[in-house]
Length: 199
Image 1 (cartoon, rainbow, N blue to C red):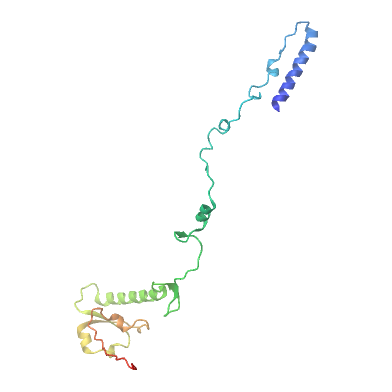
Image 2: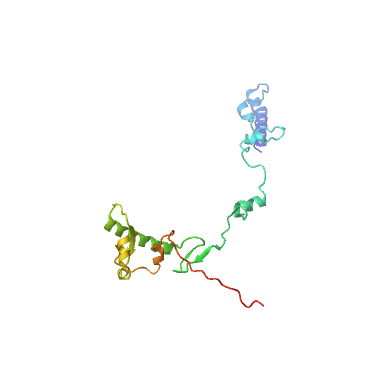
């Protein structure tokens, strides 16, 4: 559109030069006395050439994706796959209730509430052992005796073991069997059970 306007303006100037300037100057017609105004810009001249998009964008579109991402791939990226990596928020089925304290914990794992009690009690026993025995080596077996349990033990127990007294009652969850060695000789009573009411 700008090229057409410049062309019309150039035609009007040529007509003005031919009609009025020749009458005043009385000279033969010499068109294009004002070439800078008459001649349109070469960039705006319409050219009958084939359109090529590379001449406009100059190759900066080479880094964009050329294929459309399918719906399956979009859903896989958004929600994952149950066989590989599921991104959906699903209810957990491995949460159990502790039978001792009632807190929730993962299946096949220790209850964190009960383990925190055991850890605190272990820390108290370690501090008591360091207070009485120090860092010297002990040749006898170390035994823990809580408040009120000393009268229930024999004299042989005190001779064979190094007793450490704790001035507090034994916790309910801390059974005496926990202090028993795993390789101790345990006698198990066995009895034969015969089937009955057989014909």
